[in-house]
Structure formats: structure tokens, C-alpha cells
Length: 296
Image (cartoon, rainbow, N blue to C red; front, side, top):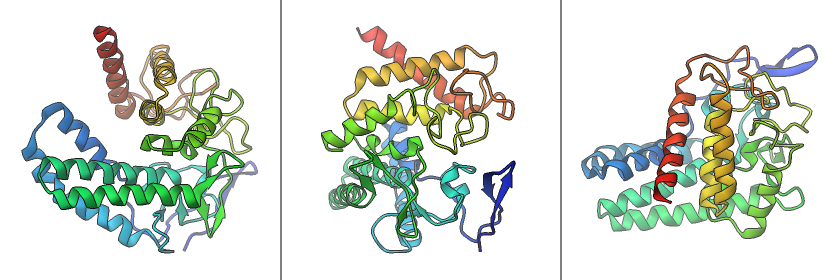
């Protein structure tokens, strides 16, 4: 059972836990593992992890698609990695575009792993599953009038404007009109393109709070994924621009922290310091820039 949300000075801040659901983390393991393989070309590594990732992928679709529509839901806020997002204020489960994008990436990575391991039938199966998942996302989550992918709860869209509505850019296979609409939202200075993008709730949304975790601050991991999504979708210069602005954001502070104020660029008071996610991704983004520069 999910109790009522807690209110702080009249604003819903987070659900009153516990929520009766299994807790995991977003399915990005296969995506990350494939990046490691691209660096090491260690086939033994793929052999060791392939079956475990298959089992985890099966768990997502078997246990997190309550309405059996082929799209997965978050059943616990913690499983999203976005613990305090306003997307969960009205309760769970929520069918979210970011989750299904991660699952698309996982299926894509499994297909690539299967190809390397010469599991040809598996590779075809995962590729077919990925294409079907993307088609369902467009059919059921895409709002052409709004130009966004909305999360859904109880069959109704959760119309809270967050960058996670833009995450299907990561698939790299969206139709051009959809890509164009998403990028227009991303680069709108009243929404996601302030001085230090990308806020985790749009500046124009009434839920926006630039200093409260997942309700407005800029996170390096969100930017990292959007940079990759822009690259995959053919917006290379825009991806480079967001990468540079992300590097500048980190460099302007004396410490690498959990999240930042999207309008001032300052480290938020409640953000954790010496934060590993931000530091690791800052290094990777810097290396990406250096590799590009050296190849010119």
C-alpha cells in the first residue's frame, strides 16, 4: 500500500514509504557492459555475464508489466533511481519513457552480445524485441500535440515535464518529426535549456524546485545520457554543446557534487560532495572531448 504523500510548505515532496514492491535499479547493466566490451574486446567477459543479464531482462518484463501492454512500469520510486521525482507523487506503478528506453538499450546490447557469442537466434530475438518495444513506446506514450513522451499511471498521462520524456532519443531510431519535437523542448530556455542545463523538472513546470533532489537540479548522469541520445539521433553539434556546458558546470565549482542549481550553476546545499557518479562521468565526457579533438 502507498500512503499519502508528505507535504512541505504546501508542496508535495515525496511519497511516504514504504511502498510494497520489489526494489531494484534501472536496467542499464547491459548498456554499460557493452561499453566495457567495446573497450576491452573481452569475449570471456561477455560469456560470464550474458545469462545473468538475460535473467534480469526477463524479470523486468515478467514482473513489471502489470497491465500486459508490453511496456514496463516502475513499481517503486527507488527502482527508478529518481527517488524524489514528482512523477511518483500520485503513486505507483508508473509506465515511464526512461525505463522503457533503458530496456530498449538492454535488448540492443543483448543482441550485440549474442552476435559476438555466435548465438544467432538469440541475436535476432533480442533485435526483434527491441524494435517491438520502440513501436509500442511510440504508439502508447507519444503525444504528438505536446511533442513529448508522457509517463502513464492508471491509464492516464502524468503531465509533469521532465527530461525523462526526452530519453527515447537514446534509441537513435525515432522518426524525424519526433526527434525534432523532442529537441525543440530540450533547447527551449524556458524548459530545459537554462544557463546550466538540463534541469530534472522543466523550469516552466509548477513542480520545479532548483535545489530539491530530482525536482529541478541538474545532474551529470542525466546530461550524460542525453548527450549520448543526441549523438545517436544525429544531433552531433548539439551533443557537443551540452557536453561542453556540462564540463563547464563541474569545472566552475570547487568540488564535484551530486547535483547543481540549473540557473546559477552552484552546488546545491543538500547535494552529496565528492560524488562518484558525477566524477566518473565528468572524466568520461572529458575523454570523449579529448579523443574528438585529437582526431581532427
